[in-house]
Length: 357
Image (tube, rainbow, N blue to C red; front, side, top):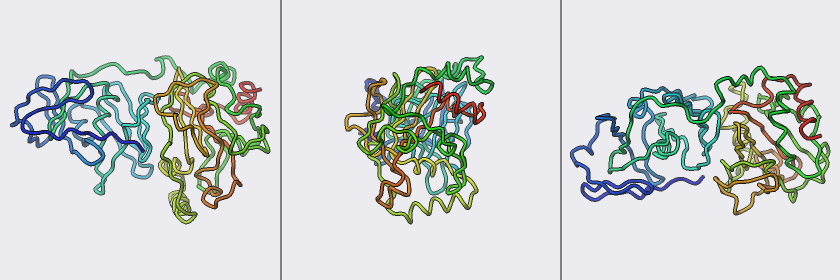
């Protein structure tokens, strides 16, 4: 995971800024904060500077903004509401969802210490709240004028949960196939909603196997971005489960909980690339064998862009060093919700066949 290293250790009372902000003078008596402060529309947020960057307690931000948040200890997920904006993060996943759309940054990630205190990097304020920061040794300062309108997200009259198959096809038919020459599988276990007993959950996406989709799928098979969008996750530094035993420990937790916690679910997807398209549509490409070295978060892509190659990362086959589970897993979301949620299984088959017939 790429993490922002903040090189802002100050000498005396000089106050340095992030990005292209100018250096300003600051009263050193204001540096020793006992908590967040808001004076004349300028917020002072206590920060901690660690080896991997500057961070702040989410509790402190909420005191300034008047928002709210919840941290789910089982799933290790964080939901934050600030004014009209809603944010969602998963532990160990360097992707920020804002109002159902995913931001092209890898500087924002969830931090939970041993006392279960929840922190975020200061990049959350800069990029998530679109608010410039200035820094002192112990605080980050930013202008805060109160409630603002939501950034992005679905239109006010968006009624996705009431859509039928025709409406879904019309919304998604801009997407081309992820694998050239392959056919979308209609095998029930390859479709969304199929039970996954091994992790006490359900299949969330679409599987493309050689035996059911054709196309001579192997580790040399390229995966295409399917449409014009922007890369919001690219696992260049992915590390596989070190052993079957470690992976089985995660699966044992799913049995204990009776469901798959989100942070474990993400590990089981292996190496991933996520692409955000217009109108809230997003693809998670999972189990990849490899991705192009020059593919990075923020890159613009189109239907001809190769974003990776078919693999089995995250699966039992990967940790056992065989290709028994080689396939592409693809999750398709609309404003943060899985596309198939409003549809029956038959409607899901119909939508997929009509999009990629």
